[in-house]
Every structure is written in C-alpha cells, then in structure tokens.
Image 1 (tube, protein in one colour):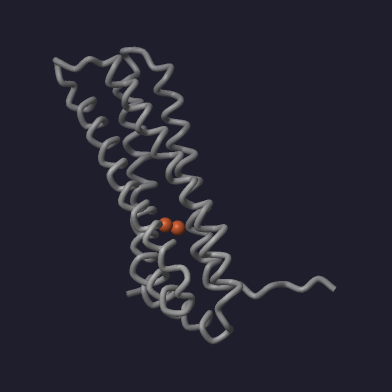
Image 2 (cartoon, protein in one colour):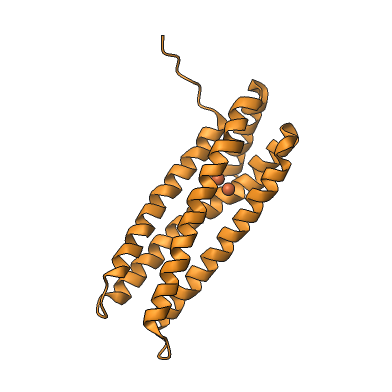
Amino acid sequence: MIQSRKPGPVDFLKEHHAQIDGEIAKFEESLRELRYSGGGTLPRHIRQLRQAMELFYLRLSRHVALEEQVFFPFMEKYVPRFEPMISFFKSEHESLRKNHEAVASSLKRFSRGRPDLNAGRELERLRGTATYLIYLLRNHAKVEDESIYKSANRDLNADEKAELARRIRDYQYS
Ligand SMILES: [Fe+2]
Ligand SMILES: [Fe+2]
C-alpha cells in the first residue's frame, strides 16, 4: 500500500524555494534577452530585468525573514548541532542581500542613463553580478533543502513539528 506522508512544516518552506526558483527562471530569461538587446530595446530589457528582480527579491526577503525569525531559532533550540550551519546560512543571507544591492545599483545606473556610462563594460558587469546572484541563491536553497530542512522532517518529533507548523502559520498571518 502506498502511504501518503502527512505534509510537514518544512513543506511550506520548500514550497517557497520552488516559488523563488520560478521567479529566478524569469529573471534569468530577462538576463538572456539583455544579451541580444540593441540600443533601441535596451531600456525595455533593463526595465524587465528590474521588475523580475524586484519580484523574486520580495519573495526571497519574506522567506529569509521567516527562516531567521521562526525556523532557525526553533531548530537551534531542538536540534542544537545545527547552530554552526545556521550561522553559515545567515551569512549567506547577508551575501545575497549585498549581491542584490550590487545588481540593483547597476540597474539604476542604466535607468538613469548616465552620459559618462561605459555601457558595454557596465553591461558586462551587470551580467556578471546577476549571474552570480542566481548561482548563490540556487546553491543556498539546495544546501538548506539537503541539510536543515531534511533534519526538521527527520529529527523533530510529532509535537515539535506541530508546534513549528503553528509558529510558521502565526508568523505568516501576523
Ligand atoms: Fe535561507
Ligand atoms: Fe530557504
């Protein structure tokens, strides 16, 4: 008989990862389009890229806040061996924030159309920082999935899981 597993509290967080990944795919697509844009289409492509980035970053910021304010403190309490890993994840959150800022300010320079702008070189830099941000984010989500998310399913008992699910729900709707 096939047993259907009851959804656990981390399924909700995993769903966030999947949604963020969907948004990143759109961002990646806009980045690809930028490669083929000529002088006339550049402003439109920059605008698209900016919108795509804002969408995924908004989703990501909410997810990071939920992890740092609810999920990580809960895991630190019930599975203390994860403490060092959690510090590492937090430092990655900080790197994600800094890289997002770098991409955002590069995009802003394009939007303002500064006359002294060396467009070719700036475009290269933008592609580089944006590609790195995508890499960082995908890698971060993958490592979380394979370590702390797995542990939450495996190491928490039924009561702890129910409590974590309740806290996540409360946080989402507060
Ligand atoms: Fe995270
Ligand atoms: Fe995450």
